[in-house]
Image 1 (cartoon, rainbow, N blue to C red):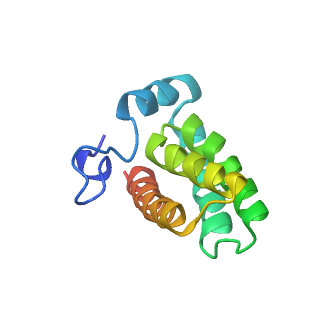
Image 2 (image 1 turned 90 degrees about the vertical axis):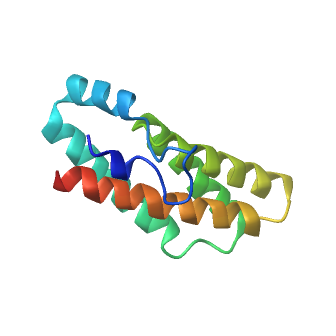
Length: 119
C-alpha cells in the first residue's frame, strides 16, 4: 500500500486511513469489491460535502452517514471528524470549526481513495 496516501500533509501523527484494516477488508471482500466500495464512499463524500448543507439538522444527518461509511472502510480520521460535527450540530454549538476539520479530512480521504484506486 502506498505510504504517501496514508497521512495528510502536515499531519504526521494522524493517518488518513488504517492500512491494516484496509488490508483486512481487501482480503475479506477482494480487491475489485473493495475498490468499488471506496468509489461509493468517494461519491458519498462528494455528495454530502462538496457543498455542505447550511441547515444544522441536515448537516448532522450528512455527518452521521459519513461516520458509519467512512469508519467501516478504515477512514477513521474522517469518521471521527464527522462524529464531532454531528455532535456540534445536535448540541446547537458553533459548527464552523468542526465543519472545517471535516472538509479537510474529506479532502485527504478523497485523495487517498483516488491513489488507492489508481494503484
